[in-house]
Image (tube, rainbow, N blue to C red; front, side, top):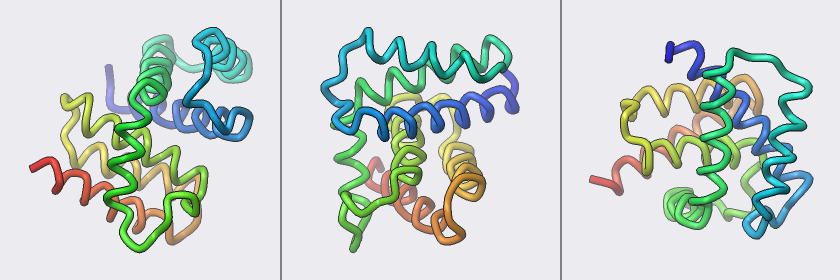
Length: 144
């Protein structure tokens, strides 16, 4: 898959995770069928190449599957910031990036971090990218 298609997949995954977090705040306990419906509804409004769509679907399903471990890593590395206070969009970006860093290690760490920073610049506040960079750097450091 090309770099651009993987970037688009990340963008779509963050959008799906954000929508999911708004509609289903307790999405940890979500039923698989509900998740499939959510993903299908998203693709009714967006058209991307098939491989980007498949990758985005893979990201979303796996972020949900590994959410307890992902959130634990975020909590450990978001010093001086209560987990509940992290903006939803920032949390979705972090969840995707932490998933990639911990469970899909074929993409270089710096690429994952840079992609998360770009997503923060596109979807969040001016200060968000620095926060996200710090949390992800901590996740990488704690793995060593």
